[in-house]
Length: 499
Ligand code: FAD
Ligand code: DLZ
Ligand code: SF4
Image (tube, rainbow, N blue to C red; front, top):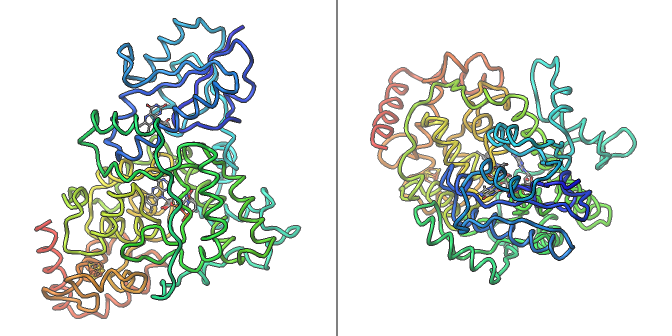
Protein backbone atom coordinates (compact mmCIF):
# COMPACT_ATOMS: atom_id res chain seq x y z
CA UNK A 1 0.00 0.00 0.00
CA UNK A 2 1.59 3.31 -1.04
CA UNK A 3 0.32 6.61 0.20
CA UNK A 4 0.58 9.94 -1.59
CA UNK A 5 0.95 12.63 1.07
CA UNK A 6 0.11 16.15 -0.07
CA UNK A 7 1.77 19.15 1.57
CA UNK A 8 0.73 22.69 0.52
CA UNK A 9 2.84 25.83 0.71
CA UNK A 10 1.37 26.90 4.08
CA UNK A 11 1.70 23.41 5.63
CA UNK A 12 5.47 23.26 6.18
CA UNK A 13 5.30 21.46 9.54
CA UNK A 14 6.97 18.08 10.14
CA UNK A 15 4.14 17.00 12.47
CA UNK A 16 1.46 17.91 9.89
CA UNK A 17 -1.46 15.45 9.96
CA UNK A 18 -0.81 14.18 6.44
CA UNK A 19 2.94 13.74 7.08
CA UNK A 20 3.50 12.60 10.64
CA UNK A 21 3.10 8.84 10.13
CA UNK A 22 5.12 8.71 6.88
CA UNK A 23 6.35 5.22 6.08
CA UNK A 24 8.98 3.91 3.67
CA UNK A 25 7.49 3.63 0.19
CA UNK A 26 5.16 6.64 0.65
CA UNK A 27 5.59 9.76 -1.48
CA UNK A 28 5.27 13.36 -0.34
CA UNK A 29 3.85 15.61 -3.07
CA UNK A 30 4.68 19.33 -3.10
CA UNK A 31 3.70 21.58 -6.00
CA UNK A 32 4.68 25.08 -7.06
CA UNK A 33 1.80 26.13 -9.30
CA UNK A 34 1.18 29.29 -11.27
CA UNK A 35 -2.50 29.37 -10.29
CA UNK A 36 -1.56 29.89 -6.61
CA UNK A 37 1.17 32.33 -7.59
CA UNK A 38 -1.23 34.53 -9.55
CA UNK A 39 -4.75 34.29 -8.05
CA UNK A 40 -3.73 37.64 -6.62
CA UNK A 41 -0.48 39.45 -7.47
CA UNK A 42 1.24 38.55 -4.18
CA UNK A 43 4.04 40.77 -2.88
CA UNK A 44 7.34 39.56 -4.40
CA UNK A 45 8.80 38.84 -0.93
CA UNK A 46 5.76 36.71 -0.03
CA UNK A 47 6.37 34.57 -3.11
CA UNK A 48 10.07 34.16 -2.37
CA UNK A 49 9.27 33.31 1.24
CA UNK A 50 6.76 30.60 0.26
CA UNK A 51 8.69 29.04 -2.63
CA UNK A 52 12.05 29.12 -0.85
CA UNK A 53 10.55 27.76 2.41
CA UNK A 54 8.83 24.99 0.38
CA UNK A 55 12.13 24.04 -1.28
CA UNK A 56 14.05 24.07 2.03
CA UNK A 57 11.31 21.99 3.67
CA UNK A 58 11.41 19.44 0.82
CA UNK A 59 15.21 19.18 1.18
CA UNK A 60 14.87 18.66 4.92
CA UNK A 61 12.30 15.86 4.38
CA UNK A 62 14.60 14.21 1.81
CA UNK A 63 17.51 14.38 4.28
CA UNK A 64 15.27 12.62 6.82
CA UNK A 65 14.75 9.81 4.30
CA UNK A 66 11.34 10.78 2.88
CA UNK A 67 10.72 10.40 -0.84
CA UNK A 68 9.57 13.81 -2.06
CA UNK A 69 8.03 14.44 -5.47
CA UNK A 70 8.59 18.19 -5.81
CA UNK A 71 7.11 19.93 -8.86
CA UNK A 72 8.95 23.18 -9.57
CA UNK A 73 7.31 26.20 -11.14
CA UNK A 74 9.85 26.17 -13.98
CA UNK A 75 9.34 22.44 -14.76
CA UNK A 76 8.19 22.46 -18.43
CA UNK A 77 5.68 19.67 -17.72
CA UNK A 78 4.04 21.62 -14.85
CA UNK A 79 0.33 22.09 -15.72
CA UNK A 80 -0.07 25.05 -13.35
CA UNK A 81 -2.86 24.06 -10.95
CA UNK A 82 -3.12 21.96 -7.78
CA UNK A 83 -5.85 19.74 -9.23
CA UNK A 84 -4.10 18.89 -12.50
CA UNK A 85 -0.77 18.36 -10.70
CA UNK A 86 -2.41 15.96 -8.23
CA UNK A 87 -3.87 14.08 -11.21
CA UNK A 88 -0.42 13.85 -12.85
CA UNK A 89 1.10 12.66 -9.58
CA UNK A 90 -1.57 9.96 -9.23
CA UNK A 91 -0.66 8.72 -12.74
CA UNK A 92 3.06 8.71 -11.78
CA UNK A 93 2.75 6.93 -8.43
CA UNK A 94 -0.53 4.95 -8.64
CA UNK A 95 -1.10 5.38 -4.86
CA UNK A 96 -3.59 3.22 -3.02
CA UNK A 97 -4.33 6.10 -0.65
CA UNK A 98 -4.06 9.91 -0.85
CA UNK A 99 -3.76 11.99 2.31
CA UNK A 100 -4.17 15.75 2.56
CA UNK A 101 -4.50 18.15 5.49
CA UNK A 102 -7.42 20.59 5.40
CA UNK A 103 -6.22 23.78 3.71
CA UNK A 104 -6.35 27.32 5.04
CA UNK A 105 -8.70 28.63 2.39
CA UNK A 106 -12.25 27.72 1.44
CA UNK A 107 -11.31 28.11 -2.25
CA UNK A 108 -8.64 25.39 -1.92
CA UNK A 109 -10.91 23.10 0.14
CA UNK A 110 -13.41 23.12 -2.71
CA UNK A 111 -10.61 22.03 -5.10
CA UNK A 112 -9.31 19.44 -2.65
CA UNK A 113 -12.68 17.70 -2.40
CA UNK A 114 -12.13 16.57 -6.01
CA UNK A 115 -8.67 14.99 -5.41
CA UNK A 116 -9.91 11.67 -4.05
CA UNK A 117 -7.93 12.40 -0.88
CA UNK A 118 -8.72 11.66 2.74
CA UNK A 119 -8.79 15.18 4.21
CA UNK A 120 -7.37 15.25 7.75
CA UNK A 121 -8.07 17.92 10.37
CA UNK A 122 -5.35 20.59 10.66
CA UNK A 123 -4.53 20.13 14.34
CA UNK A 124 -1.74 22.73 14.41
CA UNK A 125 -4.32 25.17 15.86
CA UNK A 126 -5.65 25.25 19.43
CA UNK A 127 -9.29 25.11 18.23
CA UNK A 128 -10.94 23.30 15.32
CA UNK A 129 -13.65 24.75 13.07
CA UNK A 130 -16.03 22.27 14.78
CA UNK A 131 -15.09 23.30 18.33
CA UNK A 132 -15.47 26.98 17.39
CA UNK A 133 -18.90 26.27 15.86
CA UNK A 134 -19.90 24.51 19.10
CA UNK A 135 -18.73 27.54 21.12
CA UNK A 136 -20.65 29.90 18.79
CA UNK A 137 -23.87 27.88 18.81
CA UNK A 138 -26.75 29.73 20.45
CA UNK A 139 -24.74 32.91 21.19
CA UNK A 140 -26.39 36.16 20.13
CA UNK A 141 -23.02 37.83 19.69
CA UNK A 142 -19.59 36.35 19.07
CA UNK A 143 -17.03 38.26 21.10
CA UNK A 144 -13.33 37.47 21.06
CA UNK A 145 -12.86 38.20 24.78
CA UNK A 146 -15.19 35.39 25.89
CA UNK A 147 -13.78 32.94 23.37
CA UNK A 148 -10.28 33.85 24.58
CA UNK A 149 -11.15 33.17 28.22
CA UNK A 150 -12.40 29.71 27.27
CA UNK A 151 -9.18 29.12 25.30
CA UNK A 152 -7.12 30.12 28.35
CA UNK A 153 -9.05 27.60 30.45
CA UNK A 154 -8.72 24.87 27.81
CA UNK A 155 -5.03 25.45 27.11
CA UNK A 156 -4.04 26.14 30.73
CA UNK A 157 -1.93 29.09 29.52
CA UNK A 158 -1.41 31.78 32.18
CA UNK A 159 -3.83 30.01 34.54
CA UNK A 160 -3.70 29.36 38.26
CA UNK A 161 -6.28 26.63 38.70
CA UNK A 162 -9.53 28.11 37.39
CA UNK A 163 -8.31 31.71 37.63
CA UNK A 164 -6.18 33.84 35.35
CA UNK A 165 -2.71 34.56 36.75
CA UNK A 166 -2.51 38.09 38.13
CA UNK A 167 -6.29 38.02 38.81
CA UNK A 168 -7.22 39.57 35.46
CA UNK A 169 -7.89 38.14 32.00
CA UNK A 170 -6.76 41.22 30.13
CA UNK A 171 -4.15 43.94 30.73
CA UNK A 172 -4.99 46.06 27.69
CA UNK A 173 -5.39 49.26 29.70
CA UNK A 174 -1.61 49.13 30.34
CA UNK A 175 -0.87 48.61 26.65
CA UNK A 176 -1.70 51.83 24.85
CA UNK A 177 1.46 53.91 25.19
CA UNK A 178 3.04 56.03 22.48
CA UNK A 179 6.79 55.47 21.96
CA UNK A 180 8.87 58.05 23.90
CA UNK A 181 11.63 59.70 21.85
CA UNK A 182 14.40 58.15 24.00
CA UNK A 183 13.16 54.55 23.67
CA UNK A 184 14.97 52.88 20.75
CA UNK A 185 13.55 49.48 19.71
CA UNK A 186 16.06 46.75 18.80
CA UNK A 187 16.70 45.89 15.14
CA UNK A 188 14.65 43.18 13.50
CA UNK A 189 16.44 39.80 13.17
CA UNK A 190 17.16 39.47 9.43
CA UNK A 191 18.45 36.46 7.51
CA UNK A 192 20.64 36.83 4.41
CA UNK A 193 19.21 34.85 1.48
CA UNK A 194 21.19 31.65 0.77
CA UNK A 195 21.80 30.22 -2.73
CA UNK A 196 18.38 28.54 -2.82
CA UNK A 197 16.58 31.76 -1.90
CA UNK A 198 18.71 33.70 -4.42
CA UNK A 199 17.61 31.29 -7.17
CA UNK A 200 13.94 31.80 -6.21
CA UNK A 201 14.47 35.58 -6.11
CA UNK A 202 15.76 35.48 -9.69
CA UNK A 203 12.76 33.42 -10.77
CA UNK A 204 10.27 35.76 -9.09
CA UNK A 205 12.00 38.85 -10.52
CA UNK A 206 11.89 37.37 -14.03
CA UNK A 207 8.41 35.82 -13.98
CA UNK A 208 6.41 38.19 -11.81
CA UNK A 209 7.89 41.67 -12.35
CA UNK A 210 4.45 43.34 -12.16
CA UNK A 211 3.66 41.93 -8.71
CA UNK A 212 3.43 44.32 -5.74
CA UNK A 213 6.36 45.41 -3.61
CA UNK A 214 10.12 45.42 -3.46
CA UNK A 215 12.03 42.15 -3.72
CA UNK A 216 15.12 43.38 -1.91
CA UNK A 217 16.33 43.50 0.75
CA UNK A 218 14.87 40.05 1.50
CA UNK A 219 15.40 39.25 5.17
CA UNK A 220 12.80 36.58 6.01
CA UNK A 221 13.68 33.21 7.58
CA UNK A 222 12.90 30.33 5.20
CA UNK A 223 13.71 27.39 7.51
CA UNK A 224 12.37 26.30 10.87
CA UNK A 225 15.80 26.75 12.48
CA UNK A 226 15.97 30.38 11.39
CA UNK A 227 12.32 31.01 12.31
CA UNK A 228 13.13 29.66 15.81
CA UNK A 229 16.05 32.09 15.95
CA UNK A 230 13.70 34.95 15.04
CA UNK A 231 11.37 33.80 17.83
CA UNK A 232 14.30 33.71 20.31
CA UNK A 233 15.27 37.22 19.30
CA UNK A 234 11.72 38.45 19.94
CA UNK A 235 11.40 36.70 23.32
CA UNK A 236 14.74 38.06 24.56
CA UNK A 237 14.76 41.57 23.13
CA UNK A 238 11.18 42.66 22.33
CA UNK A 239 8.65 40.75 24.43
CA UNK A 240 9.31 42.69 27.67
CA UNK A 241 8.13 45.92 25.99
CA UNK A 242 5.64 44.35 23.54
CA UNK A 243 2.64 45.26 25.69
CA UNK A 244 3.60 48.86 26.39
CA UNK A 245 4.20 49.83 22.76
CA UNK A 246 1.90 47.41 20.93
CA UNK A 247 -0.20 50.24 19.49
CA UNK A 248 2.62 52.75 18.87
CA UNK A 249 3.77 53.80 15.39
CA UNK A 250 7.05 55.45 14.47
CA UNK A 251 8.32 56.84 11.20
CA UNK A 252 11.32 54.85 9.95
CA UNK A 253 10.75 52.03 12.46
CA UNK A 254 8.44 49.45 10.95
CA UNK A 255 8.77 46.65 13.47
CA UNK A 256 9.06 48.34 16.91
CA UNK A 257 8.57 45.63 19.57
CA UNK A 258 6.40 43.35 17.41
CA UNK A 259 7.32 39.69 16.93
CA UNK A 260 7.23 39.68 13.09
CA UNK A 261 6.50 35.95 13.19
CA UNK A 262 3.06 35.83 11.53
CA UNK A 263 4.44 34.57 8.17
CA UNK A 264 6.34 31.76 9.95
CA UNK A 265 3.25 30.78 11.94
CA UNK A 266 0.97 30.93 8.92
CA UNK A 267 3.17 28.74 6.69
CA UNK A 268 3.87 26.28 9.50
CA UNK A 269 7.54 26.88 10.33
CA UNK A 270 6.45 27.65 13.90
CA UNK A 271 3.43 26.37 15.80
CA UNK A 272 1.16 28.50 17.99
CA UNK A 273 1.54 26.25 21.05
CA UNK A 274 5.35 26.44 21.10
CA UNK A 275 5.26 30.23 20.72
CA UNK A 276 2.78 30.69 23.58
CA UNK A 277 4.80 28.28 25.76
CA UNK A 278 7.98 30.27 25.11
CA UNK A 279 6.24 33.53 26.07
CA UNK A 280 4.78 31.97 29.23
CA UNK A 281 8.22 30.63 30.21
CA UNK A 282 9.73 34.12 29.83
CA UNK A 283 7.12 35.40 32.29
CA UNK A 284 7.73 32.48 34.70
CA UNK A 285 11.47 33.25 34.68
CA UNK A 286 10.71 36.89 35.43
CA UNK A 287 12.15 38.01 32.07
CA UNK A 288 8.96 39.69 30.82
CA UNK A 289 6.07 41.38 32.65
CA UNK A 290 2.55 39.98 32.67
CA UNK A 291 0.98 42.82 30.67
CA UNK A 292 3.36 42.02 27.80
CA UNK A 293 3.06 38.24 27.97
CA UNK A 294 -0.72 38.22 28.37
CA UNK A 295 -1.09 40.77 25.54
CA UNK A 296 1.09 38.66 23.25
CA UNK A 297 -0.54 35.32 24.09
CA UNK A 298 -3.99 36.91 23.56
CA UNK A 299 -3.02 37.77 19.96
CA UNK A 300 -2.25 34.14 19.18
CA UNK A 301 -4.50 32.13 21.48
CA UNK A 302 -7.36 34.64 21.20
CA UNK A 303 -7.42 36.69 18.00
CA UNK A 304 -5.74 34.25 15.65
CA UNK A 305 -7.93 31.32 16.69
CA UNK A 306 -11.06 33.49 16.79
CA UNK A 307 -10.63 34.79 13.22
CA UNK A 308 -9.99 31.26 11.94
CA UNK A 309 -13.12 29.96 13.68
CA UNK A 310 -15.19 32.83 12.33
CA UNK A 311 -13.85 32.31 8.79
CA UNK A 312 -14.86 28.63 8.65
CA UNK A 313 -18.16 29.32 10.43
CA UNK A 314 -19.21 31.98 7.93
CA UNK A 315 -17.68 30.91 4.62
CA UNK A 316 -18.46 31.01 1.73
CA UNK A 317 -21.02 33.79 2.35
CA UNK A 318 -18.84 35.89 4.70
CA UNK A 319 -17.10 38.10 2.13
CA UNK A 320 -20.30 38.86 0.21
CA UNK A 321 -21.86 41.32 2.69
CA UNK A 322 -21.38 45.08 2.36
CA UNK A 323 -23.21 46.42 5.43
CA UNK A 324 -22.19 50.05 4.93
CA UNK A 325 -22.82 49.92 1.16
CA UNK A 326 -19.30 51.14 0.43
CA UNK A 327 -18.54 51.27 -3.29
CA UNK A 328 -15.69 53.74 -3.85
CA UNK A 329 -12.81 52.23 -5.88
CA UNK A 330 -9.44 51.74 -4.15
CA UNK A 331 -7.36 54.90 -4.78
CA UNK A 332 -4.16 54.51 -6.81
CA UNK A 333 -1.98 55.58 -3.85
CA UNK A 334 -2.65 52.23 -2.11
CA UNK A 335 -0.39 50.81 -4.85
CA UNK A 336 2.15 53.62 -5.20
CA UNK A 337 2.30 55.03 -1.64
CA UNK A 338 2.28 58.50 -3.19
CA UNK A 339 -0.01 60.65 -1.08
CA UNK A 340 0.38 63.81 0.99
CA UNK A 341 -1.12 62.02 4.01
CA UNK A 342 2.13 61.07 5.72
CA UNK A 343 0.63 58.29 7.88
CA UNK A 344 -0.71 56.57 4.75
CA UNK A 345 2.54 57.10 2.82
CA UNK A 346 4.53 55.57 5.73
CA UNK A 347 2.24 52.56 6.25
CA UNK A 348 2.10 51.80 2.51
CA UNK A 349 5.85 52.44 2.10
CA UNK A 350 6.63 49.98 4.95
CA UNK A 351 4.35 47.48 3.21
CA UNK A 352 6.11 47.90 -0.15
CA UNK A 353 9.57 47.56 1.42
CA UNK A 354 8.92 44.73 3.87
CA UNK A 355 5.62 42.94 2.95
CA UNK A 356 4.83 43.86 6.57
CA UNK A 357 3.06 46.54 8.58
CA UNK A 358 2.03 46.01 12.17
CA UNK A 359 -1.54 45.65 13.37
CA UNK A 360 -2.24 49.29 14.20
CA UNK A 361 -0.89 50.49 10.84
CA UNK A 362 -3.18 47.96 9.11
CA UNK A 363 -6.21 48.71 11.29
CA UNK A 364 -5.98 52.38 12.22
CA UNK A 365 -4.19 53.87 9.21
CA UNK A 366 -4.84 52.05 5.90
CA UNK A 367 -7.91 50.23 7.29
CA UNK A 368 -9.35 53.31 8.99
CA UNK A 369 -8.95 55.36 5.81
CA UNK A 370 -10.70 52.63 3.75
CA UNK A 371 -13.56 52.58 6.29
CA UNK A 372 -13.98 56.36 6.47
CA UNK A 373 -13.69 56.84 2.69
CA UNK A 374 -16.22 54.05 2.00
CA UNK A 375 -13.91 51.97 -0.18
CA UNK A 376 -15.38 48.86 -1.83
CA UNK A 377 -14.67 45.91 0.56
CA UNK A 378 -13.72 43.39 -2.17
CA UNK A 379 -11.04 45.76 -3.54
CA UNK A 380 -9.64 46.49 -0.08
CA UNK A 381 -9.64 42.79 0.79
CA UNK A 382 -7.77 41.91 -2.36
CA UNK A 383 -5.17 44.55 -1.48
CA UNK A 384 -4.63 43.12 2.04
CA UNK A 385 -4.48 39.57 0.66
CA UNK A 386 -1.64 40.33 -1.70
CA UNK A 387 0.52 42.94 0.04
CA UNK A 388 1.48 41.11 3.27
CA UNK A 389 3.82 38.12 3.63
CA UNK A 390 1.45 36.64 6.25
CA UNK A 391 -1.73 36.99 4.18
CA UNK A 392 -3.91 33.93 3.70
CA UNK A 393 -7.63 34.32 3.26
CA UNK A 394 -8.64 32.59 6.51
CA UNK A 395 -6.88 35.28 8.56
CA UNK A 396 -6.95 38.24 6.16
CA UNK A 397 -10.68 38.21 5.39
CA UNK A 398 -12.19 38.45 8.90
CA UNK A 399 -9.59 41.08 9.85
CA UNK A 400 -10.33 43.21 6.80
CA UNK A 401 -14.00 42.57 6.10
CA UNK A 402 -15.06 42.41 9.75
CA UNK A 403 -12.57 44.27 11.91
CA UNK A 404 -11.32 47.05 9.62
CA UNK A 405 -14.32 47.68 7.33
CA UNK A 406 -17.30 46.63 9.48
CA UNK A 407 -18.68 45.17 6.22
CA UNK A 408 -20.21 42.26 8.18
CA UNK A 409 -22.36 44.66 10.21
CA UNK A 410 -20.81 43.69 13.55
CA UNK A 411 -20.33 39.91 13.46
CA UNK A 412 -16.63 40.26 14.29
CA UNK A 413 -16.32 43.65 16.04
CA UNK A 414 -18.81 45.36 18.29
CA UNK A 415 -18.29 48.74 16.62
CA UNK A 416 -16.44 50.24 13.64
CA UNK A 417 -12.78 51.09 14.37
CA UNK A 418 -13.26 54.65 13.06
CA UNK A 419 -10.90 57.36 14.28
CA UNK A 420 -9.95 60.93 13.45
CA UNK A 421 -6.43 62.36 13.07
CA UNK A 422 -6.14 62.82 16.86
CA UNK A 423 -5.72 59.06 17.36
CA UNK A 424 -2.92 58.79 14.79
CA UNK A 425 -1.26 61.88 16.26
CA UNK A 426 -1.40 60.41 19.77
CA UNK A 427 0.03 57.03 18.78
CA UNK A 428 2.69 58.09 16.23
CA UNK A 429 5.10 60.78 15.10
CA UNK A 430 3.69 60.73 11.55
CA UNK A 431 1.87 64.07 11.87
CA UNK A 432 5.17 65.93 12.52
CA UNK A 433 6.19 65.25 8.92
CA UNK A 434 2.80 65.86 7.30
CA UNK A 435 1.57 68.82 5.29
CA UNK A 436 -1.81 68.43 7.06
CA UNK A 437 -2.31 69.24 10.73
CA UNK A 438 -4.20 66.90 13.05
CA UNK A 439 -5.56 69.76 15.18
CA UNK A 440 -7.05 71.56 12.16
CA UNK A 441 -10.58 70.40 11.40
CA UNK A 442 -11.52 72.26 8.20
CA UNK A 443 -9.69 74.15 5.44
CA UNK A 444 -6.64 73.34 3.28
CA UNK A 445 -4.42 72.43 6.28
CA UNK A 446 -7.04 70.19 7.90
CA UNK A 447 -6.17 66.53 8.42
CA UNK A 448 -8.44 64.59 6.02
CA UNK A 449 -9.07 61.96 8.73
CA UNK A 450 -10.87 64.69 10.74
CA UNK A 451 -13.60 65.64 8.27
CA UNK A 452 -13.76 62.11 6.85
CA UNK A 453 -14.48 60.80 10.38
CA UNK A 454 -17.51 63.05 10.89
CA UNK A 455 -18.66 62.60 7.30
CA UNK A 456 -18.55 58.81 7.90
CA UNK A 457 -20.77 59.19 10.98
CA UNK A 458 -23.20 61.47 9.13
CA UNK A 459 -23.33 59.21 6.05
CA UNK A 460 -23.94 56.04 8.10
CA UNK A 461 -26.12 57.51 10.86
CA UNK A 462 -29.15 55.31 10.07
CA UNK A 463 -27.02 52.17 10.33
CA UNK A 464 -24.80 53.02 13.30
CA UNK A 465 -26.69 55.36 15.61
CA UNK A 466 -28.47 52.60 17.51
CA UNK A 467 -25.16 50.85 18.32
CA UNK A 468 -24.64 51.52 22.07
CA UNK A 469 -20.86 51.76 21.58
CA UNK A 470 -21.40 54.62 19.10
CA UNK A 471 -23.58 56.63 21.48
CA UNK A 472 -20.85 59.10 22.46
CA UNK A 473 -19.81 60.28 18.98
CA UNK A 474 -23.47 60.49 17.91
CA UNK A 475 -24.26 62.63 20.97
CA UNK A 476 -21.43 64.99 19.91
CA UNK A 477 -22.73 64.99 16.34
CA UNK A 478 -26.25 65.84 17.55
CA UNK A 479 -24.88 68.98 19.22
CA UNK A 480 -23.05 70.10 16.07
CA UNK A 481 -24.50 73.08 14.19
CA UNK A 482 -26.11 72.35 10.81
CA UNK A 483 -23.74 74.77 9.07
CA UNK A 484 -20.68 72.97 10.42
CA UNK A 485 -22.06 69.60 9.39
CA UNK A 486 -22.66 70.97 5.87
CA UNK A 487 -19.07 72.26 5.80
CA UNK A 488 -17.74 68.83 6.82
CA UNK A 489 -19.80 67.07 4.14
CA UNK A 490 -18.60 69.62 1.55
CA UNK A 491 -14.92 69.15 2.51
CA UNK A 492 -15.23 65.35 2.51
CA UNK A 493 -17.10 65.32 -0.81
CA UNK A 494 -14.44 67.45 -2.48
CA UNK A 495 -11.61 65.31 -1.06
CA UNK A 496 -13.24 62.01 -1.99
CA UNK A 497 -14.12 63.18 -5.49
CA UNK A 498 -10.44 63.99 -6.08
CA UNK A 499 -9.16 60.55 -4.99
P1 FAD B 1 2.48 40.68 16.74
O1 FAD B 1 1.91 42.02 16.97
O2 FAD B 1 3.81 40.40 17.27
O3 FAD B 1 1.42 39.61 17.30
C1 FAD B 1 1.77 38.24 17.52
C2 FAD B 1 0.97 37.30 16.68
O4 FAD B 1 -0.40 37.36 17.01
C3 FAD B 1 1.00 37.57 15.18
O5 FAD B 1 2.15 37.01 14.60
C4 FAD B 1 -0.26 36.90 14.69
O6 FAD B 1 -0.05 35.54 14.42
C5 FAD B 1 -1.20 37.01 15.89
N1 FAD B 1 -2.20 38.07 15.67
C6 FAD B 1 -2.18 39.32 16.16
N2 FAD B 1 -3.30 39.99 15.81
C7 FAD B 1 -4.01 39.13 15.06
C8 FAD B 1 -5.25 39.24 14.39
N3 FAD B 1 -6.01 40.34 14.44
N4 FAD B 1 -5.67 38.18 13.70
C9 FAD B 1 -4.94 37.05 13.64
N5 FAD B 1 -3.77 36.89 14.25
C10 FAD B 1 -3.32 37.92 14.96
N6 FAD B 1 -2.60 38.66 10.24
C11 FAD B 1 -2.15 37.64 9.49
O7 FAD B 1 -1.48 36.75 10.00
N7 FAD B 1 -2.44 37.56 8.16
C12 FAD B 1 -3.19 38.52 7.53
O8 FAD B 1 -3.43 38.42 6.33
C13 FAD B 1 -3.65 39.62 8.31
N8 FAD B 1 -4.39 40.62 7.72
C14 FAD B 1 -4.82 41.66 8.48
C15 FAD B 1 -5.59 42.65 7.87
C16 FAD B 1 -6.07 43.72 8.61
C17 FAD B 1 -6.93 44.77 7.95
C18 FAD B 1 -5.78 43.79 9.99
C19 FAD B 1 -6.31 44.91 10.81
C20 FAD B 1 -5.02 42.82 10.59
C21 FAD B 1 -4.53 41.74 9.86
N9 FAD B 1 -3.77 40.71 10.47
C22 FAD B 1 -3.34 39.67 9.69
C23 FAD B 1 -3.53 40.68 11.92
C24 FAD B 1 -2.25 41.37 12.40
O9 FAD B 1 -2.18 42.67 11.89
C25 FAD B 1 -1.01 40.57 12.04
O10 FAD B 1 -1.15 39.24 12.46
C26 FAD B 1 0.24 41.14 12.71
O11 FAD B 1 0.38 42.50 12.35
C27 FAD B 1 1.46 40.35 12.32
O12 FAD B 1 2.63 40.94 12.82
P2 FAD B 1 3.47 40.34 14.02
O13 FAD B 1 3.77 38.92 13.73
O14 FAD B 1 4.60 41.26 14.26
O15 FAD B 1 2.39 40.38 15.16
C1 DLZ C 1 0.49 31.56 -1.57
C2 DLZ C 1 1.03 30.39 -2.33
C3 DLZ C 1 1.77 30.59 -3.49
C4 DLZ C 1 2.15 31.94 -3.96
N1 DLZ C 1 2.20 29.55 -4.20
C5 DLZ C 1 1.95 28.29 -3.78
C6 DLZ C 1 2.38 27.17 -4.53
O1 DLZ C 1 2.91 27.28 -5.62
N2 DLZ C 1 2.16 25.94 -4.01
C7 DLZ C 1 1.53 25.74 -2.84
O2 DLZ C 1 1.39 24.61 -2.40
N3 DLZ C 1 1.07 26.79 -2.13
C8 DLZ C 1 1.27 28.05 -2.58
N4 DLZ C 1 0.80 29.12 -1.88
C9 DLZ C 1 0.04 28.84 -0.68
C10 DLZ C 1 -1.33 28.35 -1.09
O3 DLZ C 1 -2.01 29.36 -1.78
C11 DLZ C 1 -2.03 27.91 0.16
O4 DLZ C 1 -1.75 26.59 0.40
C12 DLZ C 1 -3.50 28.14 0.08
O5 DLZ C 1 -3.69 29.51 0.21
C13 DLZ C 1 -4.31 27.37 1.11
O6 DLZ C 1 -4.16 27.97 2.37
FE1 SF4 D 1 -2.16 61.35 8.87
FE2 SF4 D 1 -3.63 63.52 9.38
FE3 SF4 D 1 -1.44 63.06 10.80
FE4 SF4 D 1 -1.22 63.77 8.24
S1 SF4 D 1 -2.06 65.00 9.93
S2 SF4 D 1 -0.09 62.13 9.28
S3 SF4 D 1 -3.02 62.77 7.36
S4 SF4 D 1 -3.27 61.80 10.75
